[in-house]
Image 1 (cartoon, rainbow, N blue to C red):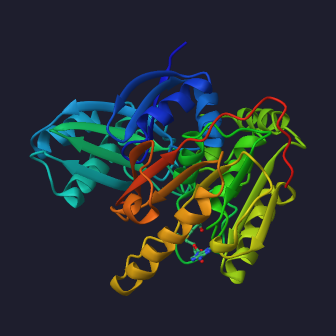
Image 2 (cartoon, rainbow, N blue to C red):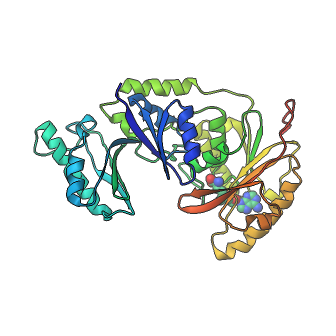
Image 3 (cartoon, rainbow, N blue to C red):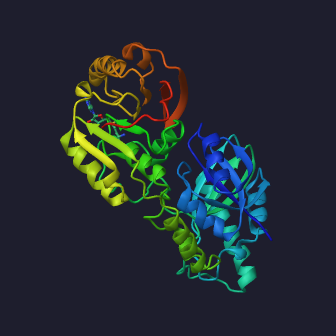
Length: 384
Ligand SMILES: C[S@@+](CC[C@H](N)C(=O)[O-])C[C@H]1O[C@@H](n2cnc3c(N)ncnc32)[C@H](O)[C@@H]1O
């Protein structure tokens, strides 16, 4: 069987988590680079990866790679690649995205136009025509140049994977769905344990936890650009979607709570959870973190409090961290996981984290502070 090499880009620092996810889906990881994980697949893997990846940003089909330091080399090598194996005569193939790092060819707009011209020439030869109507399905070309090594891909995803389709109305500062999923993956939380987000905003962390706990493929509610590609028969998409539907767990043992001081965002969170199909598993309520308490002896807090990006907010946020520290310290056996860009979080919170990990929220560097509580006994019952 001929294999296809796929590439999933991800936030910096998330490569190991994404690799684990890809392996758990049954794929073989072929290479891991900064912000990119490569894996081997066939056509059905394109559907599977798009539907299931929680922490990757998109699924790219690698068409080829070569070394180029001049536009002539870029043109000739691009022209020589088997574009016709994917792009049909009526296909539309914009040079949609280019990035160049530490390379002689650095003008991304020039790189895009040379690649476009080369693909036109390559397809002209194959289809024996002089021009293309480009009225059919779209095959966006992505170009990545790193230290003069050019890699060319077709994007099978379209709108990035963090857009799951449930978050149409956002709150002021929502966290990316992929980052929320990563945070959940970095905790041992699972079905049967209590998870609370006291700063839930539009509900991203509770919703991503529910999707994971119920084994719901995060892409089930959206479509992908490659669903229109002639090389991937519709029956493959139908089968992969059906398999994903069949894998959903209807557990009674999912306990997730989301709180926020702002009543308006709580409404948004409820509406998002409904769109994601998980509203019955999450209890959302308006509440100030300072009033948080729980009858439960064990639980997980996974949260994204305000960062205080504007100068006048910083003092308020620092006071809030101090108050949070007092409230959480009364939750003796709980574990808490907090992401923030405030570099002195631990000082204000009043406790040093057991573990700290760098994570990127888009381009913003943040830290994920992890405080581990003891493991609950097997017979522990959630009281709520
Ligand atoms: C960074 S946002 C969280 C965004 C959220 N993760 C999402 O994806 O939409 C921080 C949230 O903390 C809330 N907040 C601020 N002060 C609070 C307090 N004292 N108690 C509870 N929530 C508070 C804000 O209303 C805001 O929604």
